[in-house]
Length: 258
Ligand SMILES: NC(=O)c1ccc[n+]([C@@H]2O[C@H](COP(=O)([O-])OP(=O)(O)OC[C@H]3O[C@@H](n4cnc5c(N)ncnc54)[C@H](OP(=O)(O)O)[C@@H]3O)[C@@H](O)[C@H]2O)c1
Image (cartoon, rainbow, N blue to C red; front, side, top):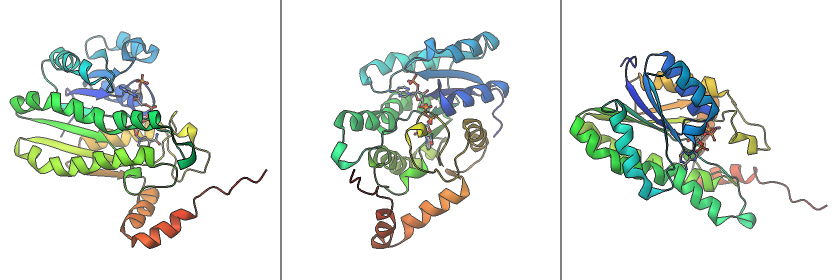
């Protein structure tokens, strides 16, 4: 599929990978609706709007505020009279050990990494059904493959999103809607700035955005990258659990006796 001229709603568009996606897709002559909690106030998006006044629209959207979403969906749909591709790119991340677990942070990760996509899907479905075609692309994560120490608050809702995508794909295809997932690894953004360990295969946000743009044009349910981290997690997922858990036990921090 060629994406030139397509209308794409990117939710999670003001920072990191999402912002790079907006820039790249505008250069590819797409019409972009860019959303995040503060999209209309984002200096980068405002500047892009000056360069692309006819093909970029900004609309604030907090996916954690379920009741606020129906009018936002209406407006996003009406900007260019329909949407070809809905790209869900929202995510939040807070590593936590069991002894410093913050329930509010966990709830927030459930909203942004899973429930927000479900709320938007619920509002968008009747519109896509009536339109009779479309593509839904969910940025999940390689973290959905296997729960790693301290990362479960992030990866558990991502695994739920992945499972939901598998469940919905056949049914959506019957309605000419293609659901795709992108499972990628570590990208240098404010999310990974919270990590204090070496990140295998760490890539730039532009690199990740370029590969997601390619995924939009391919007829594939799952796009995974980079290969090395993808292979490690895929092996962890397929090994007998007792073996995988012996390996992930080695990732625990050493107790601090100071
Ligand atoms: N970075 C990585 O290593 C990595 C790895 C695998 C997968 N991913 C996934 O890639 C996606 C993008 O991540 P990123 O690293 O680019 O993160 P980021 O720089 O923090 O960007 C996240 C985007 O989501 C928006 N957002 C956050 N909470 C929101 C909410 N409640 N409602 C609406 N928008 C919200 C943010 O804008 P506002 O703050 O203005 O709302 C921002 O535009 C996420 O789904 C993430 O899980 C990232």
